[in-house]
Image 1 (tube, rainbow, N blue to C red):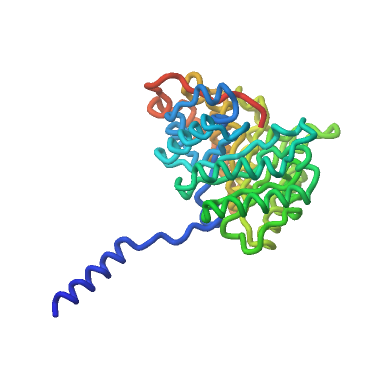
Image 2 (tube, rainbow, N blue to C red):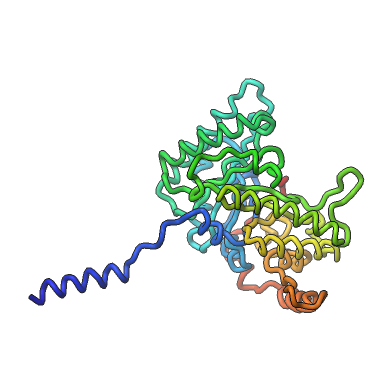
Length: 362
């Protein structure tokens, strides 16, 4: 009589100890993404040549939880092997990798079948990473070629074909799709996503990928006036309304403050960085910072000292609370920045050959 009871107890105990994790959904995945950074470890010759897995360790130590790995070119064996090296390094150090395809190599070829090329690229990649970590994400088109960019029907069609092709190979893979042109939140409504895809398809959009650039003689950010802040909140709210309407979640694939972030940041840049980061975090929208080479010297294997306060403002901002006196957060932020001004040697020293990610366009 005891044997069946003991067996039952063991089964119950085993089931309790080894209870399966709840299935990964797009909403849970978005929560895990947190704050990431765009990297060129697979996009430029220099980035490919100089990549060192210890860079991933440094990014994790800094506080990043994902990297957006931009990649261009054919899915050759050498390129796929290199991508696997990156993904394995991310797995080793606990950073979520997102492969983002820059599908623009056919834009100057009038005979190119952009739709077919994109689908075939991802079929090759999906097969290669079929048994990889479930946290590996696929960002289908980082920079659409002109034909896809200016043809909403074609873009939606290639997304539909690619999603179906990937999930026929790897049913649980998380996939990101971006709207046309510069992936503005206002264009999210143009996406036509598969029915019942809320659990595995996320939207990717941009806001100030290279900072608040001058447009028609005006900047969208000067000193952070009430009108400037309201305009930015309006764009973020556009994405939130789309999420509520469709049930899909979203991710900002890249935003920055401008090229000058390589040096000591200005007060307006610091204010903009803190405001943007706080607003996105309040909206619970994960984001990636554009881009790694502005803050990390790959050749030296160390964080750049000049923009360190700016990086901290974008990565871990100190935000005002509703009941907090205006400006109080500035004091706390200054103290926090001072504490991070000199990166710890343990997170930047390299015992291997120098590594790096090349400067490039966002």
